[in-house]
Picture 1 (tube, helix red, strand yellow):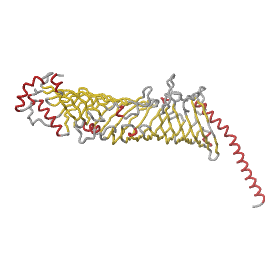
Picture 2 (picture 1 turned 180 degrees about the horizontal axis):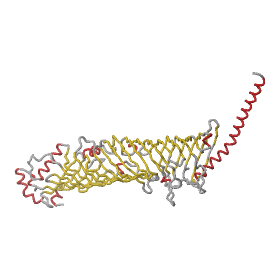
Picture 3 (picture 1 turned 90 degrees about the vertical axis):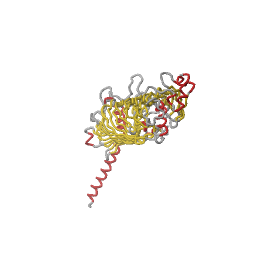
Picture 4 (picture 1 turned 60 degrees about the vertical axis):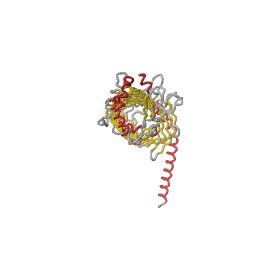
Length: 514
């Protein structure tokens, strides 16, 4: 290589080095201006106070990085910032900049805090469009936005209460800002019951004036451990779809819990499945359950109701009406007690009002249930108990020695209420041919203890319930027991446990007719 070419190449290298130095200096001088422009644009667009840390611009590949972004509600230092971002990276393509397009935004450490409703306006202080009608971000399109380690918090109105938090460990949105729905995919943690939600679909466009009218559609899956709710056990899985606007999302889906159990009881587990249709208010978190088809074991039930917040209390309460004409009584008893085999078998009809208030106590302590139950042709699994029922029917009909009366079916009906784990029975009627039993009292589900009192009414007189010479000896006693229109009326008490009940005669009350 001759001397002339060496001089030319050396000059080119020097020129390139000088250009690199000029570009580096220009970039460093541009970065403060870029910082101010990004901060002021966000401030203006979000109508919020914006703080922004370091901003760096890289030429190859063309990329902007920034750290420590905080967006705070203007004049509201009393609540957490609306948005906090640890860092974000913006990938740019030179030709796309002419079309106001950003190739990709990657966000790390995103926190979004939804503020409580204002006492005066009744709405949340969320960002609104600028008063001058000019949004510097209008027309800007982000082709792909991803966020990791994100968190969404609903800030409570009452000071000192913990916010409701969802940890979003994966979020991706595409085609943001075209004035059309953006595609999204997200995976997040549901706090109670603890589990993972995976969802995808389309959202928007966002309406800052009326956020509740922003459209949403998609599908979701949910896997949760019911054991994170005190008093429950089971692994729940759910799938569903959603469509509508944020203030009124219509959703339908199915849930499966193969091992549902109430842990406060010594009962067994049953498979629990549901198919449901509901309307969700995404701005408040309230749910209207328009139709829920429940199958507990083999028992189908129909429920409808609401999941709603109540003033001054954290969380949501569940209020349902439940009805069924085909409840498997043996399975229901198995859920309450794992005695094998169940004490009785039959089909029951139930109509009840179900309320589960907010709280941290076990489900059985919080659950309130009021309703009625009817069961026909009930039979007892224990042969000794069934023989006692057969004997009651024989004596009640005045045919104590008639062995053709056997395997008698019993009819049960009554009203009940459940509160703090104690069932209170009102007019619990138990009937077999020739006899009726009516009881009032309580049944403690956890200890299984009974405390019932009532009467037995037989069609036959006391003497006709006996055989042989005993019948003739008892004839003079018939008037003593013939009261209130019954051939024989006895006052009894039932105590012991649900598995081993003890029946006693209240002779004094019987003779006094009380």
